[in-house]
Image 1 (cartoon, rainbow, N blue to C red):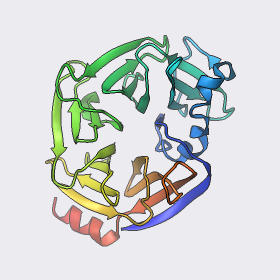
Image 2: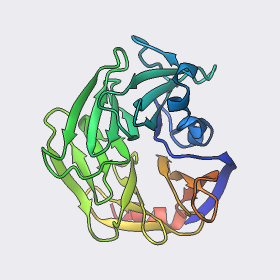
Image 3: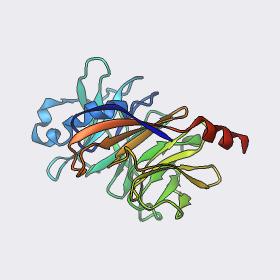
Image 4: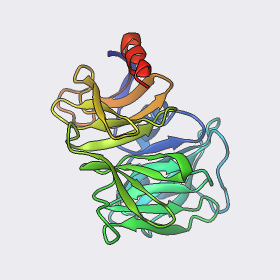
Length: 266
């Protein structure tokens, strides 16, 4: 497994981000999340939008806001950089993860809950919380086949049916200590960011088997990951104390020999 720094600069803070039809949840993360926390200080800096919907290429990210304004879901125009608030307050307290489902609805993880947001109206609907099962503390999200939501909840990787709110454990125990983020590969494998000591990237096969494919190295205080082909992209905090100082985007590439062995077993 090889690691390579793609980008490193500026003050980085924590937010979730998703870009429709692309892997830029991480590439855009370094530049876009500088606004985290500023929204509560000056909400007028962002255009309030109702009925705006989403277009291919739009960037959507969440801002943790504060106790007065609650959390925010924000859309960024990929060309002009204009920021528009899609939803704020209401069920949004401290959003972390964000993903867009097959119907164009926005799914957000927030304080032990999953929330659906209609980008056309900004309306918020509770999908699941811990009253319906062991949802835990959902953080990173990904969409899988049949529009199910895959969730890393700091305890396990689970699957949530957005219609019935049924919760199913996909993988837990083993190497998983504090699973923070998750992504789905083209082969329906899961790539999990595991906050172990040191941090790890774990591949989970469709049958639940776990394989540690990266550990330590450039993984200092990783915050999010995305997958494209055989490449895994990770955002990280480059400062030694992990105090959200210098942001970094790194690429983790599985060795060709490891890929060959894995594919030969299928």
